[in-house]
Length: 161
Image (cartoon, rainbow, N blue to C red; front, side, top):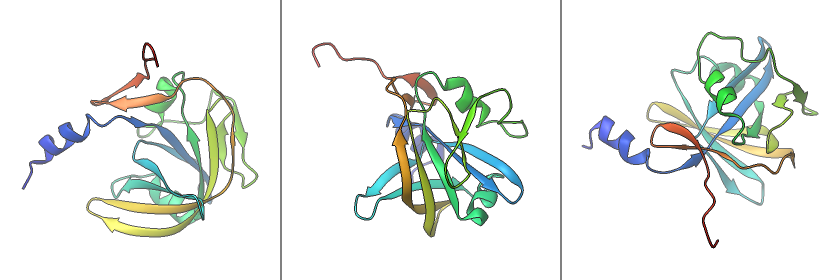
């Protein structure tokens, strides 16, 4: 079997975008940074994400049954780090907008989706979450925040592209 560290290092070479997953829950406003996020289907509009069983945030979002996803831009590295840190106030000191479903979203994200959880599958040490996008909008045209080789970075322009 492939050793866990090698597997992680190999997959770290696959560049991903970074999103915030936020929700208004019975315990208050919660959120987490996620890089295991992807589109699944256009009809119906479905997305997927993976949430670790060890997450202290995911159980509240799962119980709420819905959440917002905000696509982060290259100006959001510090926000992403904040939402990856346990035991800190993630929502103070920043301007937040709210979706019609009541979920917080950064006012300067690249785009957002309101999502309703439809299916959750056990997947190793994570849960694979499928959710239907019920509403959303593009909100900014700046460059994306990307995750590669264990670090946040900006997408570089390619000459001649």
